[in-house]
Length: 111
Image 1 (cartoon, rainbow, N blue to C red):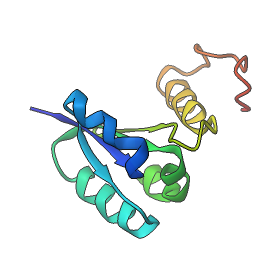
Image 2: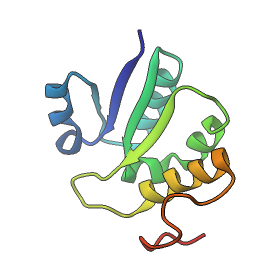
Image 3: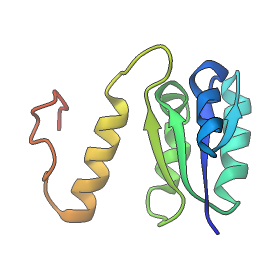
């Protein structure tokens, strides 16, 4: 059975444990890179990662984009929303469907 993981700073992730998700609090970029690589090789269908660490690990996320699983989705962290997560999801949907069926730039996401 597939699981769901949340990766990011402690303050942004600890609440997800109450929902039954696997929580992986990290403090530094290298630690986040190591944990994300480990999670990608385990039975996780979805990995949520805070936007801060997603921006730091963008090359690793790009290398995963052609794989069906796990789906790695950026989420806002405690420091706020940068819209990078929305932009990534928009791009993934455009690649899958062939056009922008979600936003058509109404949320300020640039093409």
